[in-house]
Image (cartoon, rainbow, N blue to C red; front, side, top):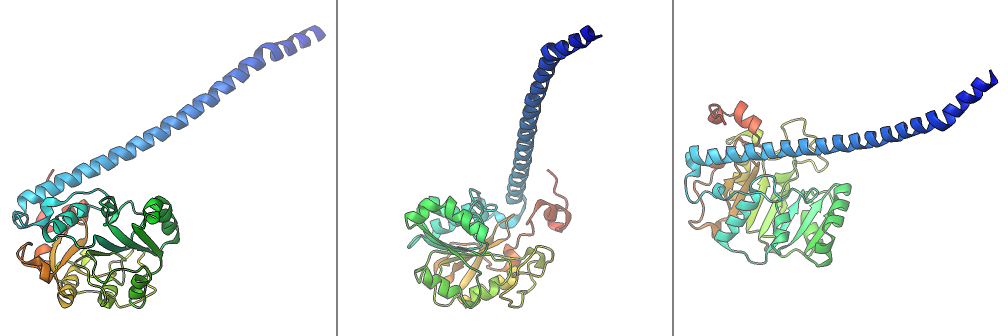
Length: 310
């Protein structure tokens, strides 16, 4: 009995244990390899989804340039849409506007800069512009400072962490030593946009980009009641400003509405003294409104696109 017991112990120690140890080690390796494979699969799946969406957007924009008569004019800004850091085709439209009217001091201001990966002015930094970003979110502010540290050190960019209100906007500009006349102002705060632009009286941008609330359509005059503590959580449509109110406030301040992105909800306004015959008229929300904030909206809601098929 003792002999058999010793034999079994020897078998466990010299044969079974090493085999199990080796098997366990191999299982660990296989598990790690499987985790890496799953991670890689997720990455490539996300990449494919991105490429599919990007392709569909390009197909949609290309089709609209063909079938929608308002885009047939050579003065239409939408022929020049392209995306580098912008949400949709804003990068291309910005470049075309300044190709037509020229630049002065190559200075921009954008509030609602987000992480800098997707906004209206990151590409201008690549083109040697100077500018100011104002961002309310502290985490995004830290990310911006880290990501664009070289631009900050080279005095190409200033970043302020603050909530933008009608009361403080001009003092924030003064704090950053903003020139009185700048080339571009971009407003995207999903709230008091109307009131903040209205409050800017001492500074004179040549071009203004303002995100508008597309759910209000091309004719409704809408801007939310002023509330300096407002934060839009994305759950309702009563925020910001409609395109018609962008047009009317622009006229009041001396600007013409010269275009909107086909997909992106941004309105482009140029100071009247610079427009001449360089842009497509009429300068109205009814003409320039684009309902295609997303492919879903375009295909399911807008009657203009209801018969469109890829």
